[in-house]
Image (cartoon, rainbow, N blue to C red):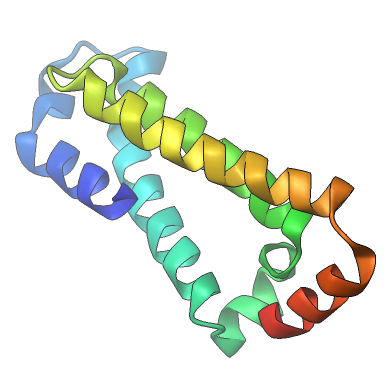
Length: 122
């Protein structure tokens, strides 16, 4: 979903018709970050060695939870000014709920079960 948001924002060229300011700077680079982070989130679920080696925080529940909440804020910000801002809020809410679930599992989960889940992530 994040990759789709980034690609549609680049294709729409809405980022090129804004006046130059900090919001223009963010609007220009944010679609590329969304594409990269979407690929990274997908790759972390596929247990790729590159992701395990360079993005170790995605192999823990705490890291995945905080990363999903961060991505939720990016998705909501990116589409807040677009015509389809409801899509940004829906995607942001889904990512936020997923991140919240990971955080709850990290802090409140059964430690033995979490240890076996952590072995599956690595």
